[in-house]
Image: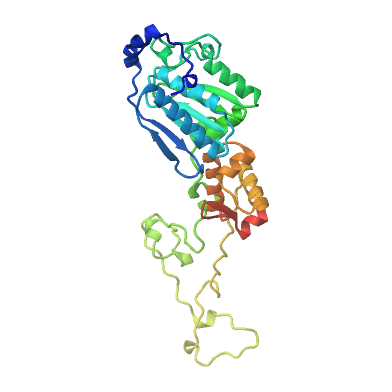
Length: 351
């Protein structure tokens, strides 16, 4: 391997000692690289198996550089290498690299001891590298400060956070910090905790189905259509039957002859002459929030799209846009065709 790839300091007389000390930095965990070709789909995963420390770091750096540039990313090889080398400080405990945003946002995480003084880690000259680590890396506290300066000069960002169960997460992006957090979902903790919109939360879902008779008390069941069946006494009393209708009590139309056999003519029952018409179903209201209007406008302009395109156009996270598109789909405003969404005829009236 070329010596200038890992520019460490090593004297000839210390070569044997370096080999003995190298056992403290052995690799026992594979590195996993997750490539998100589409934010709405599961990632591709590339695994780098454990091997010699120098080969291990070289393989990870080369793979991340190749995969991110295949996605269209522009983060240079030297910047990626500086972050990958920091896995040695975590003793290579579960190194994971996530490639997002078309290769322009990369997250490096581990489950090592973590970084307590994150502000000091960004200052030149501060380092936690041990003597055995310095046989593989510079160990002079230049890596993170260099990367931060480079990304800032290019309009991007670098951010250091704690991992969930211990360890560190370093995010580098060609985007500013807030946009990078939105792309990776780091800025959506409060929003993701909200209850998703479902059918029974819609105002029109509270209305009874057209034609359904309201629920009656037990003693009224079986008599919903009879006006006299409404309770007029204490609950439990049997409904009173209507008095028998007399033929002479029926008002005949003015000028019409009186039938000779009134019992042969059908007598109208007391009450409405015509049954009540079933009301037409109410048109459900449509609820569209700000993100919904943005998604509709984007689909109207571009014809089709998905969470990835909406993230690039408006920011926020893919999970947020997936929820917005699901809400629009439930209301019949958009329809999913393959991996993309398109406006329906109703959706075009709101776009």
